[in-house]
Length: 169
Image (tube, rainbow, N blue to C red; front, side):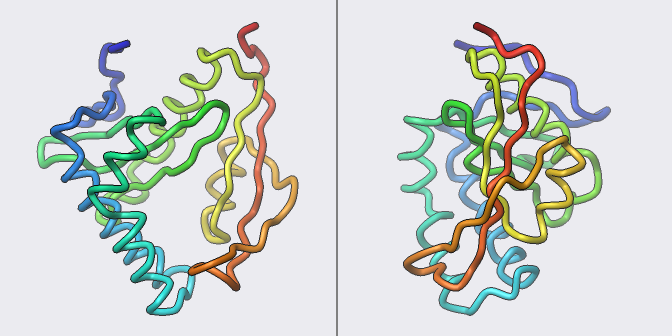
């Protein structure tokens, strides 16, 4: 189902990701994971894992077949991405060059709308520690913590939820 673009800023719109966008989304995720590695104090190995596996074109293509990906685009290209699976936001990243411009908020709101319109009564996600304040501003609450395993062992992720006032039945 194709939705009309939603207006974010004067020159930024959000639309569903198309196959032709996958390589640019992968590049955005790579730069975001590199920034995240520094911001979260991840080890070089953990950052390499995120960049090479989670940011890979193959991963973007595979995940976009089972999740709804939305992209934020300005005149220069893709500046943000959010992915939704059921009632869960699985990723939300804004280009490090564009943080603080309202793009993350707009992508979050678009994702929440997808979740609500999908008949869900809550939003769920796992957040890296430095992202928790952003999600609290979006109305989510920390409901627990989860220790990451595998390549991200040693990292604690905040489990967050938000009950939706008007979840569709």
